[in-house]
Amino acid sequence: MFRAALILSCLATPALAQTLGDVHLPLVPRTEAEAARIAAVTALTDGFTKAEAFEEKPAGAATVRVWANADAFSQLSANMPFAHEMDFKLGNALFRKSWVASPSSTLASDGLGPLYNARACQDCHLKDGRGHTPEGPDDRAVSMFLRLSVPAASSAEEIEGWIATANEPTYGGQLQDFAAPGHGAEGQMEITYTDVPVELADGTVITLRDPSYAVRDPGYGPLHHEAMLSPRVAPQMIGLGLLEAIPVADILAKADPEDADGDGISGRAAIVPSAAFGTPVLGRFGYKGGTGTVKDQSAAAFSGDMGLSTPLHTAPWGDCTEAQADCITAPHGQEAENREGLEVDTLSLDLVTFYSRNLGVPARRDVSDPTVLRGKEVFYSLNCTSCHTPKYVTHRLTDQPEQSFQLIWPYTDLLLHDMGEGLADNRPEGRATGREWKTPPLWGIGLTQQVSGHSQFLHDGRARSVLEAILWHGGEAEAARDGVVSLDTSDRDALIAFLESL
Image (cartoon, rainbow, N blue to C red; front, side, top):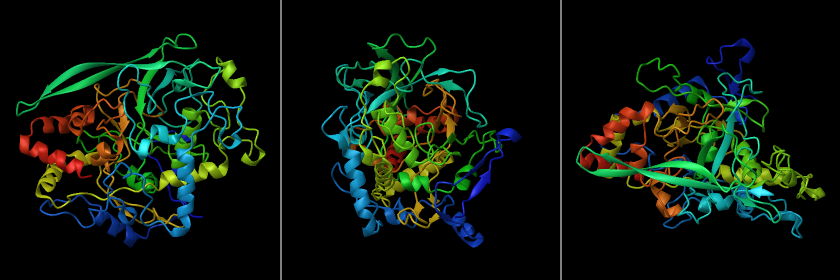
């Protein structure tokens, strides 16, 4: 089967040169005429007196109706063939399933942990939306955790620009704050906030909260003295299959690592190994582009978050380290022969992947409202589209009709950008430095409160509103942030109205 491929010019060292392509997609190549038509359709608009054609359908034919309840993100792609609906429903059941520790009489659900962050995918992605920060010191951080690592002298990854790190030697790659009976949790994430007031041009004062993180009650001794901690709030799940189906060439065409055009924006591609395909791929998922496909992301979550083995991560103890011998030798849920000796077998992983790939993006609201249109014009005039690229056309796909050849509006370039010292976690991940983050998609942002019950944004939920999230922008986005600060009240309100219509 044909696979599109692109040789990355940024991988100049011959021994390290990689071919980066859409190896994960069953695609049909575009014709020259098709490519020209797509370029015209996806070009930035310069008209703001009316909505663009199909703008109300951010996921193309896969766009779903807007439900007025918390289930707005839990619908299947609107263009899904009936024959696929059972796979979606089975995947949903597995996504919602609560796992239990071994040994257990429920053999189909045992194998949890022994150390873990959640018992079900849905525990973190409640209603398929965003997680939240703990509400006080006594609230367990079920949908938020700390990633852990230490600097390393070298790495086995032969990817140009890869920054060598290693898991924290005792606690692994992330802090697990729950444990099976007979085991102790690794510790608890502790967050301290400092207020940071920001005055806007009209005199309005917005108080930001600047977090710092620590580990309380470490259960297996002190962390390494060079341990790097970085928080992660579970992201929303909508539109993942469509993001996966954007041609890699279209994303790389926007990369400008040396800022050759002098606009101050220098997006870089995250390039990561794929356990599913055995080759480097474009990093599309995770706050720093740490995984490249929905399947890789799903398998990593089963292993790291719940301690469950899959075909891609076969260790039944998940993220436990050699320093946690009792975890490694504990009973695990691999006894069932009909599960390939795995806690999550191939079919189960595929069903969860299909479900995750096909959670529908709700339709836009108020696309023709004059205030929303003015806000869109402000968004474009501030050059926010340099990172939040409005639209793409996905690949033609031979057996994924839900994602095939759709005009989509995710508002992301899926590239890494230096976001300044204020948002820096000072923890490299792959090619991403401690100041770089992948541009998140904006679709669905206006429904966060409805679905998740809060309006917390950014990788650690520090922003309690869309405006606070904007005010945290720095680095390559500093000019746009300053532009928002200087807006008059009506234009700032219009900008927020546009964003909340997405």
